[in-house]
Length: 209
Picture 1 (cartoon, rainbow, N blue to C red):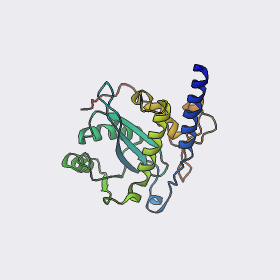
Picture 2: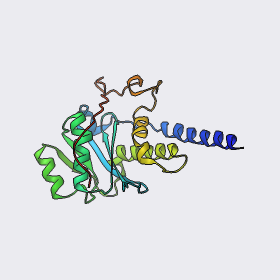
Picture 3: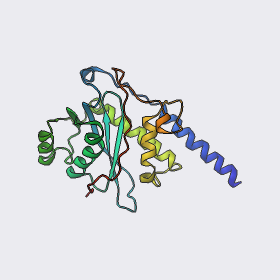
Picture 4: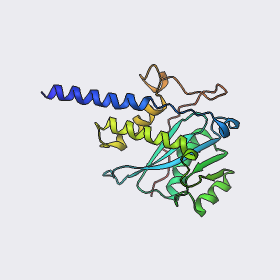
């Protein structure tokens, strides 16, 4: 009986992941056509059950021309953690962007963020409140990420922090023919045909607060 239950559970998990994979946003539209890969990002926070390590939020960062997702788990959604996440996952991996878009949350709209953006030559754009299309890219990735995390947790968000790297990888390689490993997965490409690199960094300094 236990084996039957396990098979049913596995099928439900696979079905949830397959359903999530069907969501394939159209990344090239309107205002994004003038940007090249790495130049524009949309960011947001999602809230998940608090872990034993105190993590409760994930900073999600979506590259506007490809839909490439970067994630960064933190205990609190603060301006400092936003900057740490952007530096580790965006600037140090992909280069300094020209434009970052976000909502008007206090963790984004404050003096610390404005000063940091100005010092790095980044144009920071705040979305019009209650105008969903403005944040469409990151919102769709948020839902896809949460669906994948829940599927990996067996229908719950159990162990979401442990599963975050895998879930992010699954979002970024959805549609790939071979998922044996990142090096064998079909890479994302920009409208100009450039490959989106997968960079693994270890020993990065900096702590979340």
